[in-house]
Length: 155
Image 1 (cartoon, rainbow, N blue to C red):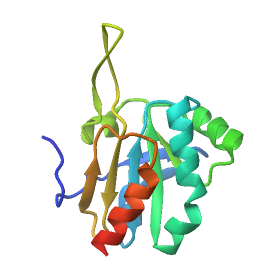
Image 2 (cartoon, rainbow, N blue to C red; image 1 turned 60 degrees about the vertical axis):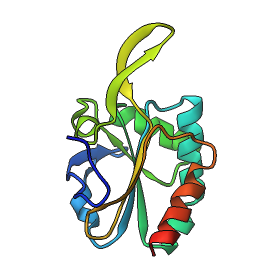
Image 3 (tube, rainbow, N blue to C red; image 1 turned 60 degrees about the horizontal axis):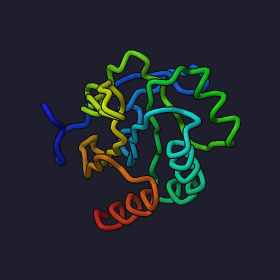
């Protein structure tokens, strides 16, 4: 079942980069940018995380939390956050449960080889927990500005 704009965002609980449990429903009443990315410390993922982190104040000003999710471990997220001084929350989903719930754990193909991995995607979730917008197969360049523009359109 594919998620759709206007539908309820599936709730979940995952550990953040400090090992604390974070539940999506804890953010009811504020906007959430939930972005899924393949791997810590890779070029595109680092750029995306740094871009979201660099705009933390802008997101705070519009009562919006940014949550990044990947299959990496809590320890990997802790090191990634420290290395780039990230100001966003990264969540660890090593069992792919949330990745699968959101439909971003998909078969991919590279150099003729098929494998499962994360398709870079972002979900903008409104204060009532409904999906306001979905970006699939995200291109990193300019993505944060697209998210902020869509938020402005919806408000």
